[in-house]
Each structure stands twice: as C-alpha cells, then as structure tokens.
Image (tube, rainbow, N blue to C red; front, top):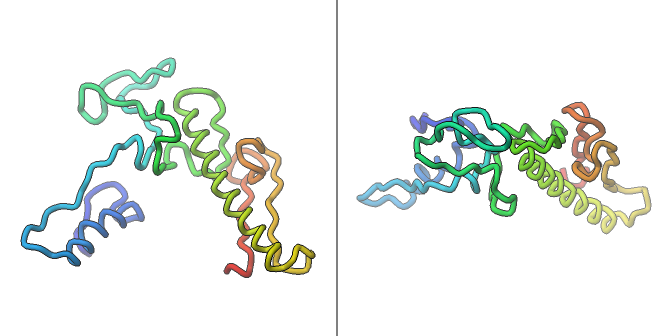
Length: 181
C-alpha cells in the first residue's frame, strides 16, 4: 500500500529492513532534506547467494564471460571464506532442511556446504541450550519436558544428526519443548 519497491523480494521479508529504514525511520526523524538511508553493502558479505558473477557457465572452477553487474571486473563471491560472510541467502544453495550435502567439490558447492554446515551448527547450539535448560528445570529424571538431540544418520559430520537421508524427507524437524511454546 506504500508503493514501496520495486525490487525482488520487496513484498516479502526481504523488503522489511529497507522499508523500515526508508519509510519508518524517515517518518520518525522527519527533516526538511528527505535523503535516502540506502547504503550499498558488499554482496559477498551481506545476503551472500553463492552465485556466479558472470553471464556464462563456470568452467573448471573459473567464472567466465561478462560481469552481470556491468563492471569490467567482478569478484567471485564463491571464493570468499565463510568467516567474511555476515548473512546468507539460501536460494541457490537451497534450504538447509533439504539436507543436500553439496559434496561434489565444485566451486558452486563448496561454499554452500560450509553455509549449510554453519546453519546446522546454529540449530545444534539452539537445541543443546534447550536440552541444558530442560535438565535444569526437570532434573533429567525422564519425567519432565526434557529435550534430546535427534540422532539422524546421514552425513552426521555435516548435519549433526538432523538428517536421515538426502532430500527434504530426510530432514528431522525441530521439536520445540512445550515449556517454551
């Protein structure tokens, strides 16, 4: 209703942050000079998509062709170390709960594998916290709302026991303890 956009995702969650800063914050701090709050962020670090920066297929781990952004030289974000990435966009890597191993070693899969691994590590940390809280609250006597980590068998070093097989049907969903709901 605010004629906000147009950009891909403007009507979804991806539009919330820019809408907040461009509309809500502008209204809160209204001044005579309504300047934009837009700041271009490094695409390799923010909303990293693990996409090919060039317009032709990658050959032997080398991006070829013209840069999609129109510049003469463009960075291949797929070569960035995971430590440089602040936020990731799982469109090309696919959603972590699809339990895709990305283990063929090609450039387009190496960073996806690391990002998916990191996602599952965060899930493990969350559920470990729930488990510790359940033990503290219910004494670990088997009579309370205790939480246990799943024990999936598919690539446990990658998925920490949250997948039984490749594909969305192999994913073991989270079970939020009832005392947290």
